[in-house]
Image (cartoon, rainbow, N blue to C red):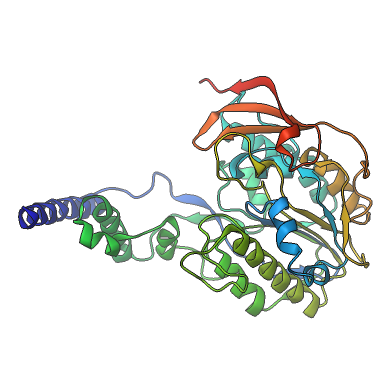
Length: 402
């Protein structure tokens, strides 16, 4: 029976492979001649005047950082000059909704298709508008934009590129692997492992840049080894990297391991941050930079409200110098637009928020389950950001309907 099943499976796989070859050779790959591509262009081009940098470490939760930091006193030196806002509540449970909210301050309440909201956020963001008015050269290193609005071409690294495939052989190989992962006998499936990033290998991009990837290893390698160039233009960079997100495959020194932990991924985030900040210091562009190190959301495994509402947030203003500072002020990502504006006007990281330690405040948070974003449930945090006992549901739900 085992032999018969193997023979039948292989025959089915071969039939599908033949069909795939036919489809690839006879079907136009794209419906348009050009596509929008987020590239790595200008990632290490820094201003000799002023830089405004947001380094976003995906899913880095504040409570776990606090626990890890107790065993790493060197973090205080790595984050020297920064103010760490420990009591911070984000806006959403997952990345898709979080990033446009961070950059625009515009809430999404399932009142329209998300693509329309994303286009609105990037077009009408008070922060991005002020950057434009102040003459910043802007770059957005975020591969999942959920909109193709031409307004995104204001970012120097997002380009209109002629659609094409650099290697049809590689393309066909990847497509066959995808088919094999489902239909091939189990013993062959290990040869069919393929991820989304593998398809970037043969995207036809301009010769001077490649598609941006938020892979941790790529960022860490480039932070250590890339050459920094300078420009007279003021620059803005939003850099989203994989950060502490699953899978847990890194130790604290950014070595790849088979079975890591979330805490080790958090430690790896600090190692990457250290490498990036050192690169800026070595090239003389650290002091003249506003730098924000933050997460889009926190992290938690179990269903129901969990610590995904508690992200890390570190802030340093231009030419700011002091010991590492921790603030317990009740901060919300709803405050970021005003904070960004003040940093653009020269405020320090300690001056960007009106709320102070000891203030009482309710902070809004929209929660939803993975793959069920059509139902947003409203909560308010009435106490410390990471305290689930004070995270209260209002009973209000925002349900998307076409």
